Image 1: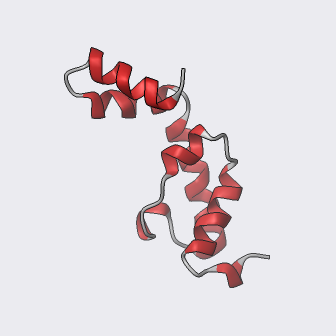
Image 2: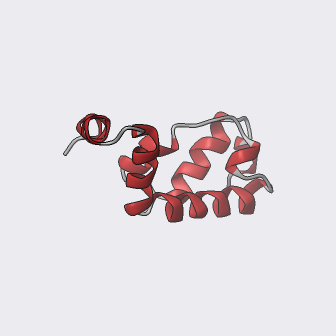
Length: 85
């Protein structure tokens, strides 16, 4: 099922689809994946995802990106490219 279909399904079956969407990500490991992204960010620059500008983490998770690559992409977009080795 495509991501947009998941949202539509959640919208049709739950009165508060935003909460349903978050639960769907947690069921598939989004929370654990995000912890790994935060670990990589903290390791590289001492900041976590909450300290940096908002990113489309849910999309990156659904695209199957690895947490380390996501951390590097985020740091590059935030201007921390000089930290990346």
